[in-house]
Image 1: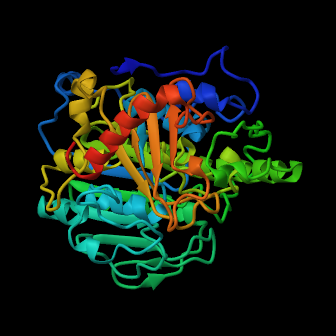
Image 2: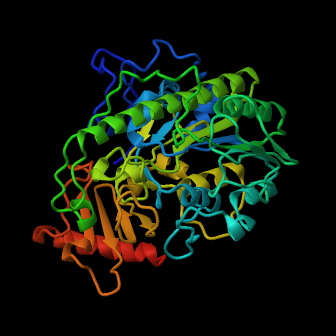
Image 3: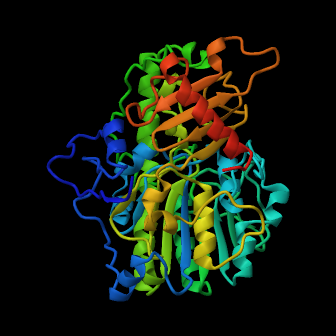
Length: 486
């Protein structure tokens, strides 16, 4: 497999209702635009790179160290990408990694993965598998590596859970950490004190990010950890009701071959589906706030003459459930792609425009790429690769396998056992840890999915005899990854 030109403009073939098929969005790599949610003209346009930048893009490298803007959505699903027009515009100017997954799809583990460049599980894993603070892990992190490379580092938004990082963590020069998730009546920890801003939190984040990029010494690194579209769902006044016409689809799911904790969940009642759709309209309104942040920051960087010197990255900490696999609404921490798949977009830094890369990637790759772009040095073993190498020769990574793993805390389906998993370009194998006394149901040990023919993971192949050789092969790859041998 390799990269391909797979961007999309609004056209007559795209839907005119407020719905996009999840399967169709996946086929398009998240680049479809949902009719009824996109303005006819987006409010900004990225400039095309000049001839020198184009030449640099040929070998995927840039001569100078860029500014780094990493935008981290909170609970955004891959199939919500079509509802963000500014992000879709950004996709046209950068490289889209459509198969990047979070190894442990949960708020705090995903943040630790970014700051450490490590999987939570396996050999040299960072070990944070629940909603916990960064703790001692913060003493060897990306912030320190970039500080030592003379970057000016800024943190804006939600740091770790439990929320409450009321003083700067090591390596951060500029600190604006949210202590509350509410849209109003919230607190922000700064370098010196806790403040109580009055504007809607998303509006305050946007204004504050503009201040940072205007005042920071270059090169700078800003990690914006948005609260959107995480609960509590209170979009800004300008975007409230923007998606009132969207009816997020729910279709009955044939799950007879899934583990017992999925099979025993009943089909959602009509009221549950209606409540889910109400939640989702608010989530999409919140994502409009995040999309406004993207559009405005591109405009600001362009006006200030910093856009050509800035790499912009966008992805999410995890997705969450909209009754997928009959799991509870807004739950997460499950081994399915509605939770794990968090596509990454990168603009600048020699990444070519209009390219979609569909080989398996993993969240530690983002850290490896940021570290390499900055000319920094990691001080702990790394599990990721520089994504510029993937862009340069995607075929070399077509057979890549990536590792995932989850503890037993806070899954979207009660009773889900801790597990480890491996993903390739075509399949996913999930292996559950046996509980004391063994599995109560003998089919609770494995899940195996064909990600090409069954991207929504509705047909578990793990216990079909004809797929046993593939299951055994993938289990060997899983063990090799877990033991640090691959």
